Image (cartoon, rainbow, N blue to C red; front, top):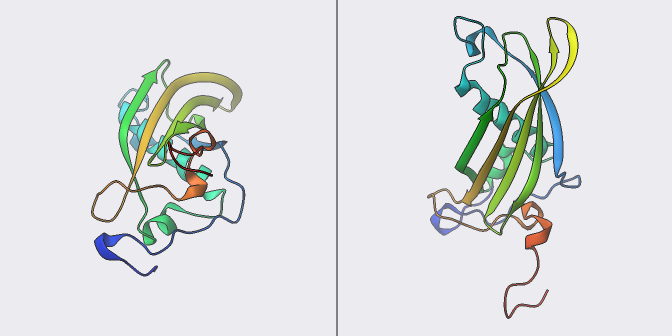
Length: 165
């Protein structure tokens, strides 16, 4: 574990060993426990699938959420929006397409598209939901802190007023 400083903030943040991707996709198969009695995925099941999409996007850099947290960098959801278009059913294979779409020095914004790519053994391409999240960076005490530089969206890396790059 990284050495702690006052307030639970870590002395240093982890460094990725691969470029930071801005988009990715991962697949999940809908489990029985995620569905209602009619075999339709419960609306609350979508939220963990979004987390899987974000987690795998981060993991592609060689840094996991667990590693970030061990360095005092915590990402908490401050906004969540899900638009349900069509039902997802038990045993469907859903591709969670995750994109980083913005942010600031302290937050990351993601958009997601959930697409059924397999149902009943047949290949499909059916967009079933869209979502967006905003994550804020906080320290171990829950206080807002700046993201590690490599996680800051490129468009927000320009200097602040009075700063030089």
